[in-house]
Amino acid sequence: MDKTAKNIKESRTHYLVLDSGVKVLHRKTDANITHVAFLFGMGSRDELPNEHGMAHFIEHCLFKGTSKRSSSRVLSRMESVGGEINAFTTKENICLHSSFMTEYLDRAVELFASIAFDSVYPDKELEKEKGVIIDEINAYREAPDELIYEQAEELLYPSSPLGRTILGTASSITTFTREDILKFWDRNFSLDDMIVCVSGNYSTAKVCGVIEKRLAPYMEYICKKRPSRERLTPAPVPAVQIERVMDTHQRHIMLLSRAYPYSDSMDYTTLVLLNNMLGGPSMTSLLNMSLRERHALVYSVESFYTAYNDAGTAGIYIATEEDSYEKALHLTYEILKGLCTIPVSERTLSKARRQLMGQMAIASENELNQLIALGRSYMRNGRCDSYEELRKKLERITPEDIMRVARDVYEKDKITMLTFKSDKI
Image (tube, rainbow, N blue to C red):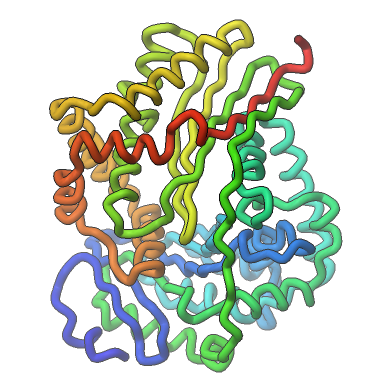
């Protein structure tokens, strides 16, 4: 174990690197529930053209059996003691996570180590899972409010894996084999891009001891030298406007533009704050107050900001009736124009800071989500802002910063628009 683990100061969050090179994040709590997450820095953006959907397919198939356990035994390993296991895939991550009572830490870490590094991917199980995923793909096509998010990024990153859907296609999924899975995992796995995260009532020394013990059988594979993986930053493309006819009774609108990558920069933090002001979860966001509260034009409106390692996406989603479409779009562009040309007041900015800090404090009550978010930050940067550090960053943001970032991201000629129009009109 790294010496820093033995003498680490008492605090809520501990980040360290073991002698083996394994990164560990431990959040000490007084709860009788523990959360564990194995986070890997590989996702759908790492797929080759013939691997579209592979990362998500692997996420599904990780529970299909190891050399020592059948699929049913894998699934029951934590559920038999009242725990839960699950996984998810993003464009840059695969994550395994589990929640359970405190006494079962060793059981959970042992299970996840075997799933990650000893899954056997039986052909029979793979074939069954292909059908499940194809059903998922078809269900997505019937949900325009979800489908539009994926199709819009195709327009923003047309020549990059970042622009492809995470789910893949029915034709790509059916071709995958066990050998394809192993090749993808071995090509993209890196010790540098893995972190084991634990939230629970233990000493950090105990957490590290369990992780060292349960990863020991796989250290030869984990530490294997591999060629450096290259992720190509997506090239910029001109903004476009696309309309597609869909089986939907509403008009669905997505306004999308390139934004800042994930980083410690003030521009990243400023855009997080600006996005929250524009269309975050608050009922008093600019878009919600104008389009829904004042004018009753929309059923749903929100903005979002997704930051990747080397790129970012900022967007606005609107669902409205056809006869409200033009006015809703006009008002949205007027709001964006105002942000780009008129500095917000100090009073408005002060309120926005307090609002964001409050929302983040409430979100931190979800310990599992907080653990995974921290794990991502530490895996990317080796650090994460504390609540106080973030508050100080927000205090440094000025009205002019908000306006400058708005111009970078939301000027009209930089915005790609995708709309889904009803086929019944």
